[in-house]
Structure formats: structure tokens, C-alpha cells
Length: 300
Image (cartoon, rainbow, N blue to C red; front, top):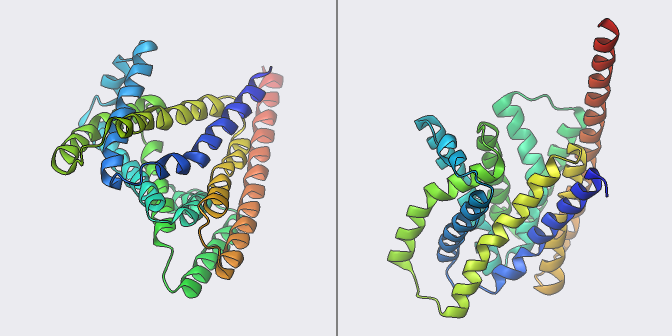
């Protein structure tokens, strides 16, 4: 089996785990979302630290948090992903899984807009149109339901902000997430000490499983990202919110109103435009790199 095929399979498995994770967190509805988040943080640290220990990469943690600036960046990124995780857990516990899926659908569009604002990244006309369509879809839901989809917006924005911080960190995904959990774990311990409900043994086992459930898809994603084109990664990632959408509507039986029936197809069209623009940019970059390589070969 070739490397690209293994990469695509790893990406599909990672997105499947993410997309079906709402079923797991639904089994923890009797535990407050803050407490689930605290245990998820602690058990993620345990699992990631074990992975790094087996790889004999423990020293990478010290190197990643080597300066106060890096430590602050890692803490900021950890707080961003912590807020994102809390929002997702809260949405599952309170019957908003459909809105959570919307958040992860619009995340790429929020991310590209944030990339334009923060890093000055260029955007094509199709990408601007995709963002406009996403804004229209959010407007439709706001008017139709009488309230903005705050959870979806919060999930998309916090995940996008997390991406901004991660882009500034030199460490790889596994090392950086381990460092994030390391810095957040003291907060999690204090939270459990002050607000813990004393879960039973069966619940503790479920909470412990949140560690590998968090770590495994990230490791698979990291493996895939090194072997698959960026445009392919972007397309396969939509499997995650699609599975979330199906779980919310077919298993949790959350209401799918006429306003949702308008907004979601608009989002899907926006994502199709965005994906088409991204694929075109990827092909253009590869052609430019190929021409540059040929020119270098000829000149030497």
C-alpha cells in the first residue's frame, strides 16, 4: 500500500472518530461539562506523555516550553482548544449537536478570514464569496430561530484562534498538544478538587477513555498530513461535521427546521466553492514549484 493511500485511510479514520465522538460524550451527560473537560485534559496529558515516552521524545517537551514567550503561546493555544472542547461537550449535553456540526462546517471559512486579518494571506474571489454565503447562512438561522447560533460561532472562532496560535509554534502537533495539556492540567486538578461530583467507577473508566479518544485521531491526522496533499486533507475533513450532522438528526433526533434546511445547503455550497478554490491554489503552487525545479535543473 502506498504512502498516500495509507495517509488517506488515516485521515478518514481520524475524521470518523471525531465525527462520532458526540456519541461518546452523550454517555457522560450525567457529569457536568466542566468536569468532563477537566478529566479529558488530565487523561489526554497521561496518554500523550506515554506516547512521547515510548518514542523517547520526552526532551521535546522541555524544548517546546523553552522560553517564556513559547510558554505563553502554548498556554494561549491550550486555553483556546480548552474553550473549544468545552463548547462541544456543552452542546452535546444540552441538545445542540446539530449546531456543533454547523460550527465545524463553517470553521474553514472563519479560519481563512482570520488568516487574512492576522497574517495578511491572500484570498481569491471564490473564497470571499464562500465567506459571504456562510455569513448569509448564519443570518438565516438568526432570523429564523430568533437567536444567533452562538455555539456554532464559538466553536468555529475558538478553533480558528487555536489554529493561529499553532501556526506560531515550532513544535509538532503531538508535542505541542502535550505541552498544552501539561499547562492546563493544574487548572483541571483545581476544578475537580473544588467542583468534582465524585463519579462512580464506570464513569471514571469513560472519563479515562477520553484521553485516547482525544489523542488517537490527532496522531492519525498528523500521520496523514505528512503523506497527503493539503487539498485532500481539507476535503476529507468535512467527513467530521457530516457525521456529526447525521448523528444529531438521525440518532439524537434534534429538530431540523425549515431554517436549517435553508442554511445548511448554503453552507455546503460555500464549502464547495472554498474547496474548489483551495484545490486550484494547490495545483497552481505545485506547478510553480515544478517549473522552479526544472529551471534549477537546467541552470545547473
